[in-house]
Length: 66
Image (cartoon, rainbow, N blue to C red; front, side):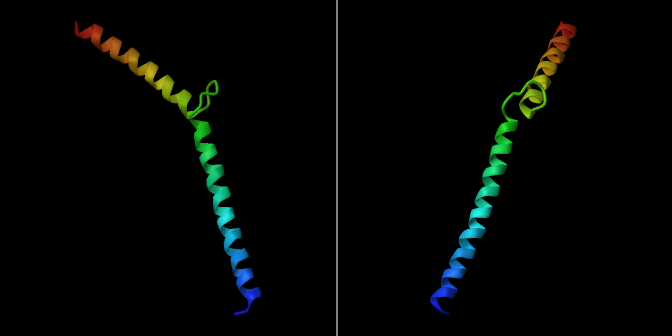
């Protein structure tokens, strides 16, 4: 292999690794955005609504058992 072949191989490897890095960065940002409240449609908002409902269910159950 010539020096030009090695250079082409190195460029190809760096390009593939750069693409993988960019994809991972996008995915991480997307998933982290889901964990921030945004007035209703994020996963964090859904969890908070479920927690509120669950607290109400516990209150109802505890008041009926007494």
